[in-house]
Image (spheres, rainbow, N blue to C red):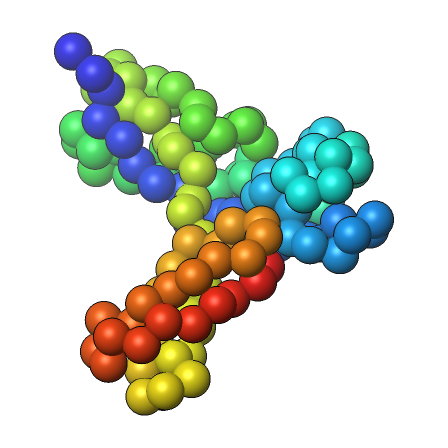
Length: 129
């Protein structure tokens, strides 16, 4: 049986590669740029502290559990009911405005150039992260 998942409320900041200025994959530690291959060390003390101190509700008994680790995903055991659940990474989304109809689109940012099609007006446009 797969343990239930709870999404973290804390996410590492989005940062750009110092070599090519494109967006790095989200995370902390040694991150490799997908476009130029540069290896960058990403650290952010406030985020690490927030990840370690994050409190979430146990999906089984609704007791508040402190994560105690800056790694995601993390398997946690509730002290009240002794059941296991997984604390997953927060999925970051950004809002992009359609240049044709000015609708707001929420997408997951990824390094590089992407073509998007607006669901409202069906026009295509490019975004670069």
